[in-house]
Length: 122
Image 1 (cartoon, one colour):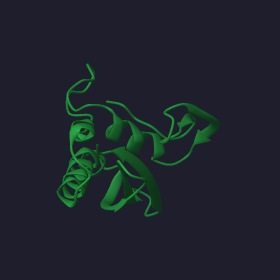
Image 2 (tube, rainbow, N blue to C red):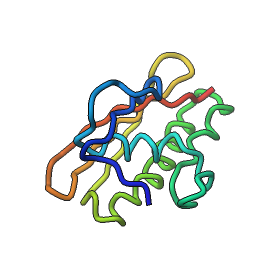
Image 3 (cartoon, helix red, strand yellow):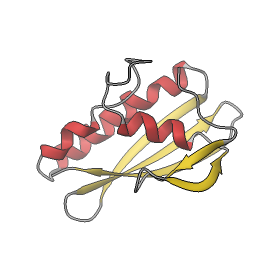
Image 4 (cartoon, rainbow, N blue to C red):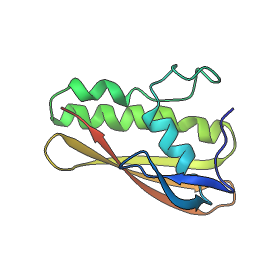
């Protein structure tokens, strides 16, 4: 099982590179679950999302609903693992060809964490 937090290096949701700071939140856990294609990681076939499928879709409202659904599915495992008590996802339009996921996570300690994640939609 992939666990993030504590002293892990923080990954940037924009570039996928390390930021040079440490993650003390569920940031890496959220990021990895969104960018990893579902079923592609050998150690945990349940880790990941179907968001990569949206890169070939057109930039329409139906795709925003799919992005929200795919993100919620991917992040549900954080609740199942008892690392979070709730996850909510909303979607807004970004630059042309992009959707922006706005993610609220309440961690196991009751702290609300907010994440913003870009998704290519066309």
